[in-house]
Image 1 (cartoon, rainbow, N blue to C red):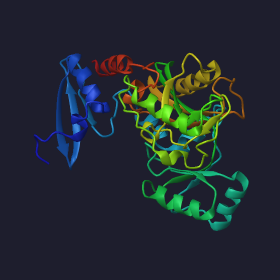
Image 2: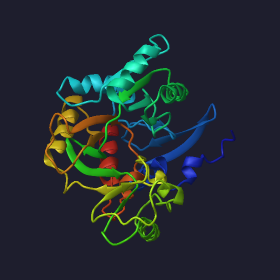
Image 3: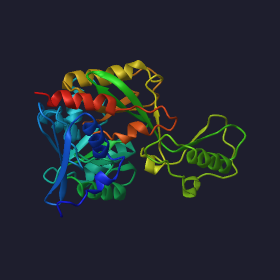
Amino acid sequence: MQDNATPNLLTDKSSNISAIIQRMIKSGFSHEHFWINEESYSRFTRPGYKTWLTRNSRLSYPMINATVSYICKNKHITYEYAKKFGVQVPYTKYVTPEARINTKEQEELLSRHKRLVVKPSDSAQSRGLTLDIATMDGLKGALLYAHEYSREVLIQEQVYGEEARFIIFEGKTKAVLLRQTPRLVGDGKSTVRQLFDIENTNRKNIVKSVVPYPVLSSYMIENYDPSYIPHNKEVLELSRSTLISGGASVYNIINKIDSSYIQIAETLTQYLGVDFIAIDLMMKDYRAKASKNNYVLVEFNELPSLKFCSSCRDGNNYNILEDLIPLVERSLKY
C-alpha cells in the first residue's frame, strides 16, 4: 500500500475514526496515518501527552485495559461474568472444534427452547449471526456460518423483546438507544399497504440522522394481506433486524425506560471498573420494572458505533464525542 494512500475509513466522514480525528485535532493533537500489512493505523501526538496508536478499523481506546477488552470480546466470558452479579443471561451452549455438539444434543436444544440463536463468540456487527433457528438443518447451517468468523461459537435460546444500548461514562448512563425492529403500527383505519407507504414517506423525511434510513422493500410485507386493517396500536413486525440498514429504527429512551435497567447496567459497569462502555440488554417491556423473567444481557461493547448515537429517528441524538474525547485526553495526560 502506498504511504500516501488514504484509508477508506478516513474518507468516510461518519466513521468512528474520522469523527475522532476531527475532535482530537480540534483539541490540539497531531494526527498521522500509515499502513502495516495492508491495514491502516492512526497515531495521535501532543506535547505533554502520551502517544495514542490505534488501528482504524478496530479502535483501541487508551482508557480500556486488556482484561476488560477480553471480557467484552468473548461473549461466553461476558455471560459467566454477569451471572456472578445476578444479571440475567440467556441459556448458552459453548461450542469449539474440540468440544463439538452432537446430533442428539442439537435435537435436545431445539426441543427444549423451540427457537435458537447461533453467534460467533468474538465477532461484532452481527457477522456470523443467525436468529430464529427452528430446524436441525437450520442449526447445522448456522453453526457452519458462525465458524466462518470464529472458532468458538455460542448456541443460545432465542429471547424475544426490544434491544437497547446503554452508553455509560464514568459510571453514569448518558443515553439509552432503543434498536426497534422494522414494524408497522395500526391506527384502526389504514390498510397494511397504506401504513407501509406512510412509513416509507416518513423515512424519507428523516434528516437529523448520520446513518441514512433506507426505504423499506415491499418484500417485507409479503406475509401480510395488504388490504388488512390492523387494529389501533397493533404491531406488525416486518423483520428481526436491529440494524438501521436492515430497517430498524433508533430512539433515545433514557427518559422513558424504567430506572431498574439503568441500575443494572451501571452496577455491571461499576464491577468492571471502566470509565466507558456500552451494555446491550434485551427487555420484554422497557417501561416495566426489571425482574428475573423479563430481560437478559446481550453483550458488553467496548467499541460502540459513534454514529449510531447520532442516528436517532426522532432527532433526540446524543453527542457522544462530548464525553468521549475529554476522557481520552485525560487518559493520555502525563
